[in-house]
Image 1 (cartoon, rainbow, N blue to C red):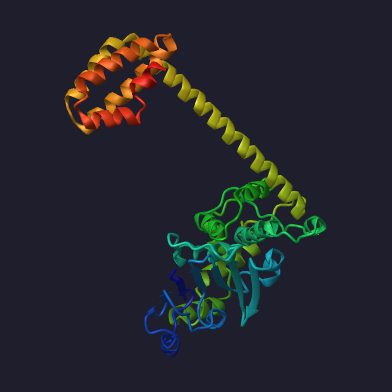
Image 2 (tube, rainbow, N blue to C red):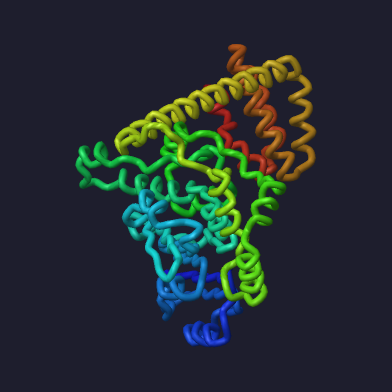
Length: 393
C-alpha cells in the first residue's frame, strides 16, 4: 500500500526574502514554491526540512497530513496578539503544544490515529481552510484552543490504562463563549482533530452566546487619531516596506483592550472535571441513540402503513392489476418483466391477506403455462419464488 504525505506552509505577515526562498528551494526540487507559499506531496520518501524550525523562522501557518492518519496544523502569531499565558491552559499532550520564539507564539495542533492504521485515500485538506484561525485567535477568540483540548479528551477516553481518579482530578480549561456556534474554520478544525460530537455537545452546554464582533468604526477612528504621530508614521513605514507583520490585527487587539473590547471571553461558569464531561457525553450519546431508534421505529411504522395502503388499493383493483401484468409481459423486455414480477408478489400478498391463496396459485399457474417458453421470464419467476409449489403452499 503506497504512502501519501502532504506538506504546506504559508507566510502571511510578510513574504520571504530572496535568501529565505533559496533556503526553502534547497529542501525540495518538486515543491511548488513562492514568496508566500510552499506545497509538497510525497508518495514515497520524506520531507527533508524541519517543520518546527521553518515555522519558528519563516512561516506563519503549516499543514501536514498523511494517509495513515497523522495530522498536524501549526500557527504562529506575535505574542502581542496572543500570549503563551493565554494559550497554556488549553495545551494537552499529543493534541496542542505551544512555545515562544523571538516574539512569536507557536501553536502545534496534532492528531494521530489511535491504532496507527487509519489509511485514508479519500480525505484531503488545504491550509486555506485554517488560516483564518490566526485572525480569530488574535481577536481573543479562544475556541480553537478549547477544541484541541476536547480532541485530547476524546483520545484520552479511549485509553485503557487510565485510573478513574485521573479523570476526576483533571479540570477543563476556561470554556470560551460561542462554542455551540463555531465558525467555518473552527468546524474544519474540529473535524481535523476528530472530536467526538457527543463530547462536543456536552461541552458546549455551559458556553455562553458569542458576543458581537462588530467593529465600532467611529470609536476605532477616534482611538487611532489619539495615537502618537511618531508611532503612526512608524507603522505606515513598516507596512510600506513589508518589514513587520500586518498592523491591522495588532491595532484591533490594542483597541479592544483599551476599550474592554468585544473579544470572546471565557464564560464564568464552573469548570468541570474530565469525568463530568465524559459522563455528560455518555448521556448525550445515549439520548442520541434513543432518538435514532425512535426515528427508525417511526419510519418502519410509516413504511408499514404505506405498504398496507398500497395493498388495499391493489385489492380494490386486482382485475386491472392482472391486465397490467399481461401487458407488461407482452413487451418482452427486462424492465417490464421486473415490474410484472413486483406486481405478482404484491398480488400474492393481497390474496394471502384475503385468505384466498388458492385463487392466486391458479392464476399464476395459468400465467406460467401461457408464457413458459419465455426463459428469461421464468428465471425471474423462480428468483422471486413465484413457482407452483410456493404459490400453493
